Image (cartoon, rainbow, N blue to C red; front, side):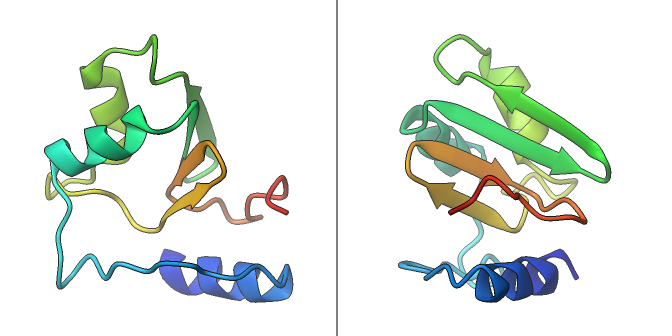
Length: 99
């Protein structure tokens, strides 16, 4: 459901997806999640109505994994990399800062 909302949001904003990885076919675990976070200057995570923003340079690995991984231990979907920001999950209203 969240991936569908994310896809619709990106289409409405006319944002182009450069690379897409299907989590069901290529699960991303803690190692891959931390590698993505290491490339970012900011991690923004949405769970329901709660938003968390972390600086991966100062946050602990445990804090980063807590907001990036789902109950299966794999990267939560959708995950978007926009510039130097890593967005994990998708809030109902979307990420209005995306351009």
